[in-house]
Amino acid sequence: MLSGIRIVEFEALGPAPFAGMLLADLGAEVIVVHRPEGGGVPGVTAEPLLDRGKKSITLDLKDRSDHAVALALIRSADAVIEGMRPGVMERLGLGPEETRALRPSLVYGRMTGWGQDGPRAQQAGHDLNYLGLSGALFYGGLPEGIPATPPTMLGDIGGGALYLVVGLLAGILNARATGKGCVVDAAIVDGASHMMALLVSMGAQFSMSARGRSLLDGPHWSRCYPCACGGHITVQCLEPKFYALFLERLGLSGDPGFADQNDPEQWPEQTRRLSDIFATRSRDHWLALFAHSDACVGPVLSPAEAMRDPHIAARGVWNDGAPQPAPRFDNQLRSPGAIPERGAQGAAIRADLQRKGWI
View 1 (cartoon, rainbow, N blue to C red):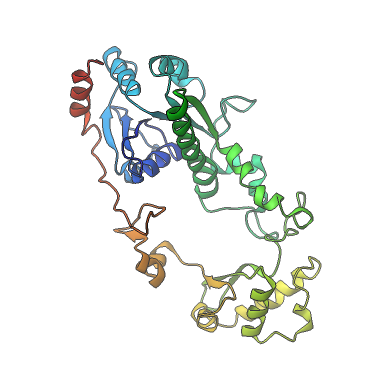
View 2: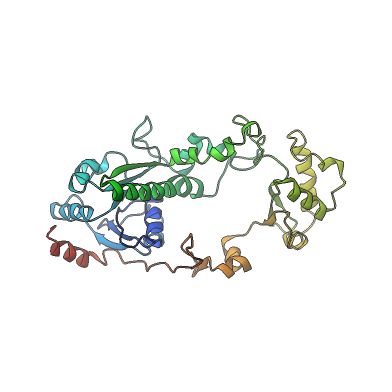
């Protein structure tokens, strides 16, 4: 889908390389500029999965000749991805002002946690820090527990990488129409705040000051329950017709204690009763009971279990322990590109830039 678009990505951590991987999965040519000494988190050994489908060149950006190669690469690109703290790329002479002077149509994508400006712009931070400040973490987990979310998914990926990708694609579309590029300031704290719009749209059914009092974070019909086997099930029968099916399967249709679905004052007692019920049988028992119904009940699977799930397997969502590209187009499942060795395409990239007279 993105064939013919070239992205130059400067090695970073987390959401920036994820954004590059997503663009590569969609067919863009993504050239990642790796540091000669290697990157990553000290003490953490990670597979280079996020480099799949990309080309790799190693450059020392403080070396004059390598710096010239980096500028030439940017000159050939539709967009740039960088995930440094604000000011780092400018100090390297590779900021938006220098690079867009070479290519006015360049879309310059900047991935940070706090944004390019503001009191926290120069502070270190991670996923939970950004989510906590945005207000999004407030709704993570059950009201009686400590706020928590799945690692990286809500902040780094949801509020960060995906907003960067949307911004880059919007910028490229505009540049192709006008010839004028732009700077995309993708801050996780911005994206995470923006994602709260759906909750905020619920108006009176959304509480900005109390956990467990909003339509989706407090009801007995919108949470996970532990089962006798130690596993968990998900319940989220929001619509009245689905709630009625849920009660019917449990034999609670005529129970006056569950007649009012949306009274926050009753939610704690309704939750306690359902907790007692689900704790009596295994996860498999409950899944069998709710099978082939619209009661909106499902399992909480580990990643290993998810790979074996019939629905996930039928769609080919995972392959060799890695998630496959998404979304799909014309119902076709695409295979991701290979993971390059660091610097593997460096000679070919340099030769191409020399042929074009850019270095």
